[in-house]
Length: 173
Image (cartoon, rainbow, N blue to C red; front, side, top):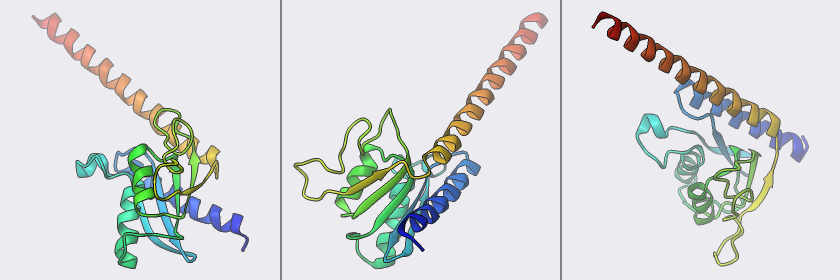
């Protein structure tokens, strides 16, 4: 199996994990940590359900990976994630010494791997994380866009229902 095929296989697993996040009402982002060709950590967004701002997919995957190898330093590990890491997650990758991150969709609002800023190769930190972007980007982006489109439609329907209920209440008064 070629490296490209392996990368796609691991990113497809991250996409599956993102679907788990969506099932739980979370923003659909999934992450996989691979070391020596083996998955050692998996995660998906859980911030809402766990009431924890740090429960992003990447953090969850890094935590699991560290427990599996009994070391927070993940030298030579590759982290696959469906969305460009935010500043918190990028910093966690630097601190855990991840060797490489491969992400799907760019995050033009909070991306910290090159879109808005680049913390992965900030010259003044002691470790730089290699980075590749755009792997299965269309699929990753479509998953996120469909989620937010549905979420907006749900909010619009809720607002309309509230307005209708308020109108009925006012008519009775």
